[in-house]
Image 1 (spheres, rainbow over the protein chains, first blue to last red):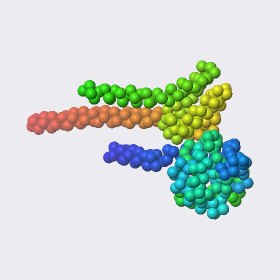
Image 2: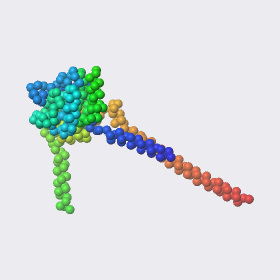
Image 3: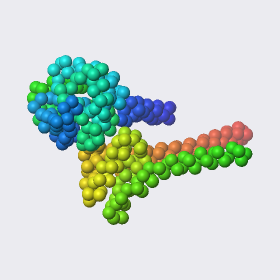
Image 4: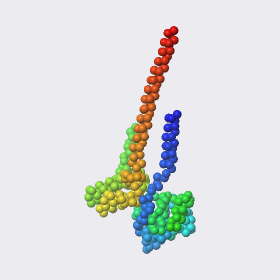
Amino acid sequence: MLRFAVIGVVFTLLIGLFWVGLGLNPRELPSPLIGKSAPAFRVPELFDATRELSQADLKNKVTLVNVWASWCSSCRSEHRHLLTLRRQGLRLVGLNYKDERAAAFGYLNSGGNPYEAIGFDESGAAGIEWGVYGTPETFVIDRQGVVRYKHVGPLNEVVIRDTLLPLIAELERT
Amino acid sequence: MRRIVTPLLGAVVALLMAGSASAQNAALLQFDSPEQEALYQGLVRELRCTVCQNQTLLDSNSSLAQDLRRKVYDQVREGASRESLVDFMVSRYGDFVLYRPPLKTETTLLWFGPLLFLVAGGLILVLVLRQQRIRAALSDLASTEIEAPATGKKRARRKP
């Protein structure tokens, strides 16, 4: 009797362990940037190469930094959500990662442009500063220019409703 | 037989050569000193490619791994130390980038998990062995107990 109880408990514990462990996304790595000032970077603007974009442009307003590329197919799936967020009055700054200008223009012309400004990171050097390893990636930056949240992979309704919007609302209040 | 073996051997050789292609690329790099080269070669084998998850920077040919190898190479050439390069990577990609993660609160389970399983396994083994010994002792006891009264009764019955 005791033996069956022990086997039952061990079995349940293992099932629980697998349930949690296998449910986790191994691609979602905790970002060491959270709680720190946005990393220093300096890249030309996508549309206006004479202008430069840097971490200073992310201050004074809660900002979403979205890393994308025209070759990134999962970026397309989150694009409509970005457009919606823009319509809601949020400031979005894009980081066009390891892309070509012409291809990036084509992507925005067909899908629409949700970004207030876009950094053109041709070499991927700014991407390294931001610890980018899988596009699309989205960072939430508060008014002081501190990174508050990072999402790896395409944004979806659930993340936006349950995590992003409450966090942004909270950051805008403070 | 030979007709099958020869192409197979060829395929194996081709695969082996493909595997060493990235190592050959590394051999083309120029270093100022053997120490620098050792530092670079050590680091690219110890840093993880965060996109591919289970490959080192040296093993992977993903574009991020190439960029990061380049970054490590440039910084090594500029005379960066091992610590500063590891810090550079960890401050951007987190501890996951290291194949040898540091010992701290979040990594305790990672470091001592195997020991935990060993202890648990040992404990279960001891319990099972002890139970077996108890059961064996009980059955010994039981068999002697059954025999003793039986013979006693028989004798008792025989007496009158």
